[in-house]
Image (cartoon, rainbow, N blue to C red; front, side, top):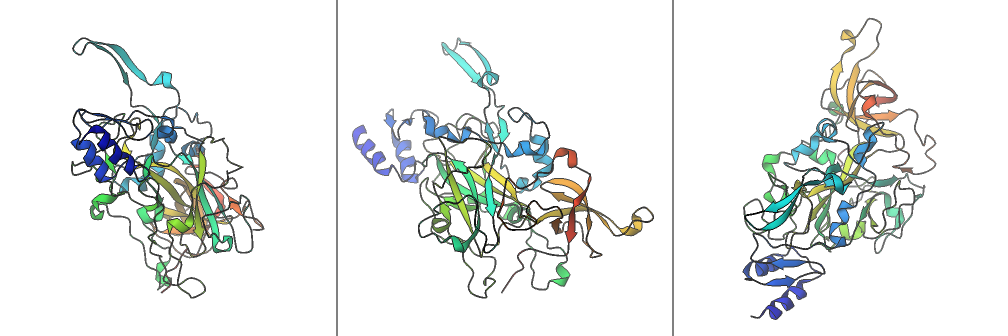
Length: 454
């Protein structure tokens, strides 16, 4: 077979994915050939792994916007802040997915040149780059509304869209399709679990245990490298060429680099609030690939566009106050430049998602009334809200335990009248300076979210 014939085969696979197992095997078998695969992709088989010369759209994920992590700090220089302490303290649940890391992006190229010189052994100049990018999660925009209240930032929606069937959305900036094999959505309560507060009084409620890494399928485990490199590893966890089977944890929004999955996700409840069969979220009905721009976003994202995940009225997400994130998994063959990312997939975008009046948190410590200073009334709770540990008091004498996820009323709600939708711009962010402080604006109430309906 001539190289021209092989190119025809490769061209026939364009638009499907650059990570298919047929394509990977084809590249593996080619000897001493230089091939153009996609515009800007350059593959050689006599290298340790197929290489790809980057073009602009390969690198769209490195063009970052409004770092979600920076909202936790009063005066953060978000371009060069060390966010590892924030990850350790406020995002401990991410460690349950072994090796999963946020995006690392470059802010100032002058800071990243390690050293240059001349290698006498190979008789060539060299330039090494440091693996010192900044952890970055793009702030996801969201909007939630009650029945009878319209959205502030409308969009046409996916094909066959009926806005009356939806109560909100999550939106995030994206570049051209074809770079990411999979984009998926993750929920904090599905990873870290959900112990319902006061469950003894709710006989139909079933706790959601934390994800057990030992029970994860291989296809759901992130691929990590002990030493991050400029290109991703094209080998899977078994040491073979990645098979391009859309392996990635989470609710898949994009598969095979271009395709919207058509497989419904199981619903937590068999019945909805009206007593009929609950809607099963399905990407090809709930994902709007290119939505209207988010006019209120803090930064311009052009030339990127926006993707929206629409939240159906039967959905049991988000639990108010939980983190919702977006994972990106680059195509494996040919590998696109990813600049020292530490895992594939990596956490690309996300936000805490509260409602206008409600949020939630996890109880980390309890001081009973008998152990508090004389004259104190009721128990005192240390609660992790938005990942930040603060002190909150209950509305009554209902008792909670360490590990419970408790419902919290925001007393001074930004939309107290509930006459408009609630957006990410209305949501107050807890900061590092709030840690360990009493939060009088928050009150624990005896409520729970998404009771199981059979």
